[in-house]
Length: 86
Image (cartoon, rainbow, N blue to C red; front, side):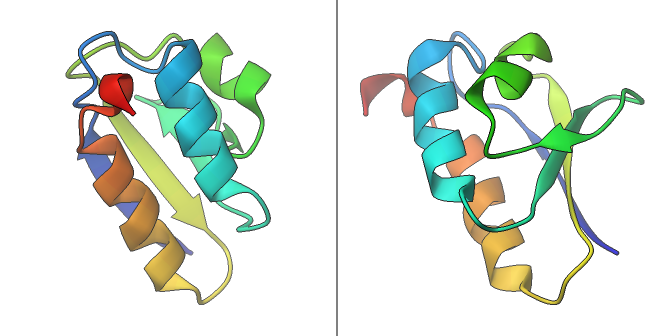
């Protein structure tokens, strides 16, 4: 399993707009996201991502059972960016 840990840069965390940008990018990737020690959820599900309650500066872990590390890198880079203005 491949993993990336990243602090969320969006000023308001993963609320509606940043969560929409993130989940759209995660669609079809098979990536999961977890906050802290919580359960990992499908990163392409906006409802599940928003239900994590991720705030600004919170650390999340992205994980993937497959070999597409570029998907993990891309999604980690998105989370490390302030997505509120997109």
